[in-house]
Length: 100
Image 1: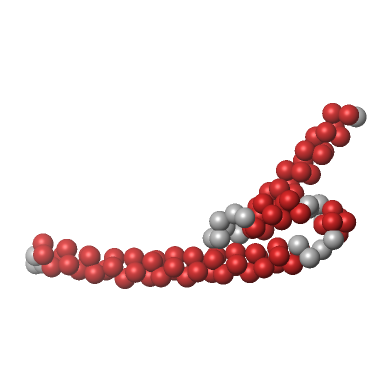
Image 2: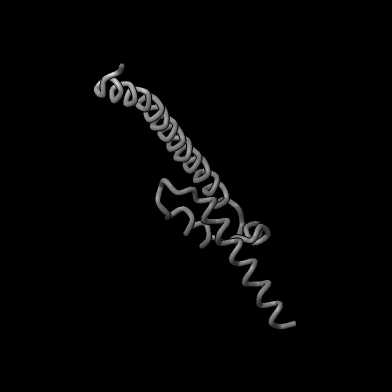
């Protein structure tokens, strides 16, 4: 018959490995997210090289780029740009509905 001490040590060692694996997975996902955010930040700088007319064609302004780049380093700036563009499109559509 197993003693209480042997049961508790067996159960704790059984759950220790998955917890360590989960920590490694979270670390890898965090590093990947940071790498992706930095890569996308470089792409935003490339957008800054476009003319104002080219930016307007894709629904952005220089101010949008500035707002996205000045966010925290760990936050993906393309998410911010997407939110800005989405809200602008919907506000224009809402205004058009009110006029018509």
